[in-house]
Image (cartoon, rainbow, N blue to C red; front, side, top):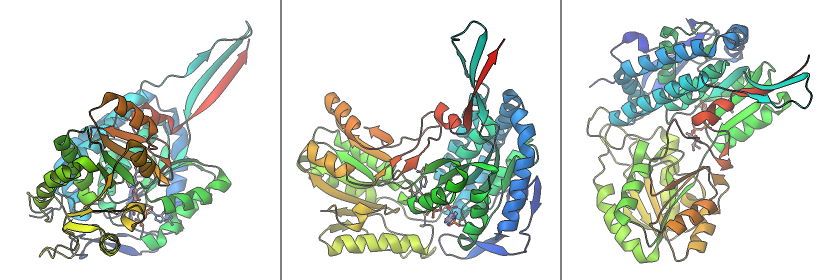
Length: 489
Ligand code: NAP
């Protein structure tokens, strides 16, 4: 089965600048690789600062008209885009699976999830209210009104090639901002297809501009945007190290920042938990996208009294996961994104075993005939806090389990990380549910729930996981600034 889209015009392989599809000005190209085999299957521009500058000029020129467009008119474009995302769901899903590798069933769900943000922000655009402030003087009128921040630079990672960019573009457009965007080098095609559909939805020229480049040239493209005063906001999803670099580089122009960064999610199973539900929750949260998610449980803590029961229920479920390319309709774990990902996962497992963890399942490359980037779903027990898999995101299908004895002990361990994106716990004691959710240092807490993301909810982290929220009404406010208007009669 081919994973290329049926609609040929959705396979875009050029930059999109000022409503024109174009190559990099210096003609350089970048190969997009099949994640399973590392074999190239498409070629896109490897852009430079000149392309970034053209994109920024277009976004800057388009801003005055777009920000004046009535919110309902902006919402109408977003609604048409939403409809097009859903009517092309299968083609977009194929593209996601083709370049990112996740099973088709997950790619279809990702398209629906991405589209849900577009619909949500179309609705939010038309329902944005400011304040009328009670006046201290009879002849004075005071209001506080929202206005768009201006041109926004958007930079996204490869693990959710549709959703990560949709949940930035949708609120930016709804707010009246224009955009310059750079998708990840591994997954540019889905982002370009999304832009093609936005074009079809009637988005005016220059409102979205997308520039594709290699990892080596990312700094050429992005630094230009960071240092230019016309870019008023940066919205980034990716690793903490790159987020810190971008925050430093954009400091001289004092941009608004939304940074959705790395995680190191704890998953706690208390002695009073419904163990079957906890296993279901872990399977949903841990193995989606082969563990390549920022909210993937990275450190699993199980109370000593239920540890064996939990592990005994978990093992057969993990053993049954089907590792296969997305062309196999029964695939549940696809390839990891690239060699660096495989090397990191392997090193985490090796380090854990060398330091006393016990490997119950997996622990190595799958040796799959479809390519060298498949990794067997893995279960480790007797994991400790100093092992690499406890200190950093593994970003792979590895369940790393530790035991604990008391609530205080496990809360201290769960919070003993610089990161604070997601945290999960399972307990049927209602008082504990309040206590533990209060104490967990995370922007997102799942209580007896493994799948948490929703367009209606604020997604984002604290501590080294960044700041800013995506989704919900808060996701729109991130793209707005407040103007206080004061008038004397
Ligand atoms: P990454 O290396 O930080 O890359 C993210 C984006 O930044 C990519 O577009 C990348 O381009 C670009 N980039 C890299 N170096 C850059 C530089 N010097 N200047 C400008 N741009 C640069 O992250 P990743 O490995 O792709 O993604 C995985 C990370 O993202 C994990 O840490 C994960 O937890 C995090 N994540 C967080 C969330 C969230 O919502 N909090 C969601 C998903 C993922 P290239 O692709 O060309 O390198």
